[in-house]
Length: 343
Image (tube, rainbow, N blue to C red; front, side, top):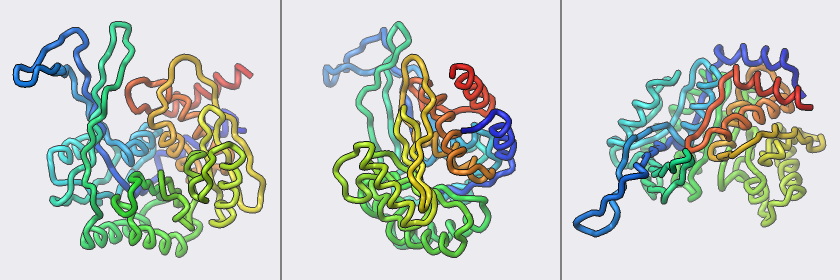
C-alpha cells in the first residue's frame, strides 16, 4: 500500500514536525540481575537479587515519545503530571536526551512519579526472564489545581503543535492525567480546530472520547461499545461505528494481522502486518504503531498509508527483546524493501 519512494518522502518531513502529547508519563526502570550470583539475606533468608545495571526509560506516554524521536520527529511537547521525587528526577534526565520541550511536564509534590520497575534475569544463552514487576503510582485523582494547570498547558501546546497524541494509560476512572475535566477540555479544542489531528489511545475508556481519531486494539474497541467479545468481526464493527460517530478515521491494531482502518461512510479496510522471524516482544508495539501513524498523517499520508507505516515500525520494535524498542527511518525503509522482496 506504499512504495519506497512515497515512504521516503513522508520520512523526510518528520524532522520539521512539532507534536504535542497529553497523558500519563511513567518511568520504566529495568534492573538487570546477575544470573550466576546467588546471595541470601541474613535478615530474611530470602534471596537478595544482585543488580548489575539499571536502565531508565520514559514509559507510557514516554514510549510513544521514544518512538517519535527515533523516527526523527523534530520537537515533542508533552503535557503531563509527575511527582517531585527521585523517580521524577530520573525521568526528567531520561527526557533530556530526547528532542523534548519539558516546559509542560508539571511536578506535583503531593503525587508519586508513576514507575514500572522490571527486574530481568538473563540466562547464559542471552534470553531474559522478567520477574514480578514493582509499580509505583498515586492511586487517587489529581487535585483541582493540578487539573487546571494541565488544561492550561494543553491549550498552549494545541495552539503550537502540528498535531496531538492523547494517551489515557490508567484504567481507573479519573486517576490519571486524562480525567473528565481534561477530556472535556480536549473535546472543545478538537471541535474548535477539527482539521488538526488529535489521535486518542485509551486502554479502558476509548468509548468516552466522542471526538478525535481513535486508535486501539480489538479488546479496547469492543469494550468501547460494551461488547464482551474481542473477535475480529466484533472489533471491526466497533471501529466502524466509532469512526462514523467521530467523523474521522479510526485505527484498530490486530497484532500480526496488521491494522484495520475505518473511515467515515466507508467499509473497514485491512492493512496487513509485516511478518517477522524469530522471537518477539510485543511490549510497546501499539505505541510504536501510534508513532508511525501520527507522524505519517501529519506528513500528509492517507489513513491506509499511515497504517502501513505503523505496521512497519511495529515489526521492528517487536524484535527488540527485553526493552521497549524503537525504529529509525533507515530501519523502516529497509524493512519495507525486505518485505517487498519477499512477496
